[in-house]
Length: 375
Image (cartoon, rainbow, N blue to C red; front, side, top):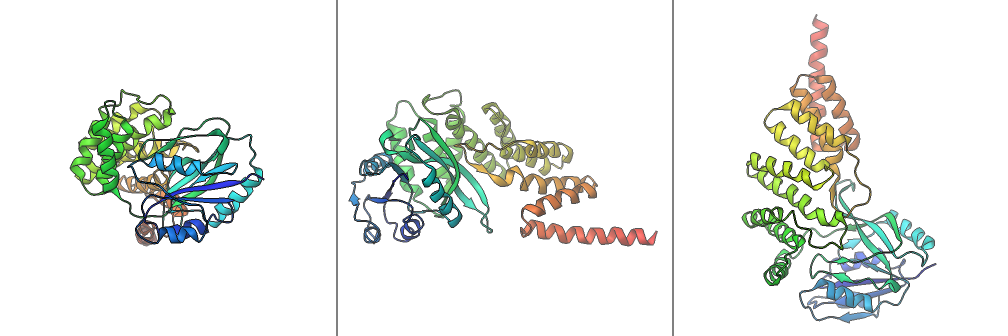
């Protein structure tokens, strides 16, 4: 069996660190905590789990801090987590089985990264990340913020999920770092522009977000970092298109939203999120037949199992089902509408929209039966 070092960087994480470490402490063989300037009880909590707690002077560079944490590891493999990550029981058991299976012939284990779950615990916003790497491969972190590992070699793809639990984060800190990077760089990376737009959007600065999303999309003929996979290269442009379109929909600027979405089709394979949002444009305009074609397209798409892009699961099944129900009802096809309602109901039987639609269909079907009996 291989050995694993857990390497973490933390700051003011007294509320989240215990649940993170409790979920992984009996799987890893070494815990390394690098503190970047906590002012609460984070370090006291860390010492309950390990004596390998180190200070690192914060220099506005997450990759530097992570590389420092990796330098302290001594075991075969290195696992990285954030303090607001947690591994649930079913994934813990799968992780233990992975540890039994893993050998030093592998360099990297890619795991599922779940950013959002619904009220029933179902995954709704998911990507995959390089999560466990062989120490001897000496992979390095890059980028001061929204950092990534430059990994290669033999890779294991796993469905083990690391779940992100924090509902808020320091967007202002991130914006400060991103602004410094953008201001000082002669060769601006689209990833930094995307993250600046998204962080601005997250704090409610919509005008700034629109400005930077548009700046990002004007750069789409540039591939700055040829060392990254095409998936990582295209991700900012696809995600930026989705976010900008949603902003325009919220502002009732539907034509702008449609133009952004249609332009996004140039970035490669169509995403269900894009198809559904185009469907939304036509549904809002009561062009139901055209909306149906886009929602049916979303259902026909095969979602990639392993990707660095974040996928919103509902757009690949639940949302097109429920919107197709609406479209067919408005076209007078009750049978087809009810068919799609039942398919959506199977996925999320307790969703408020499903409960409301079920009451509506019960009423409609009673009226139809009464009408037929009176004939």
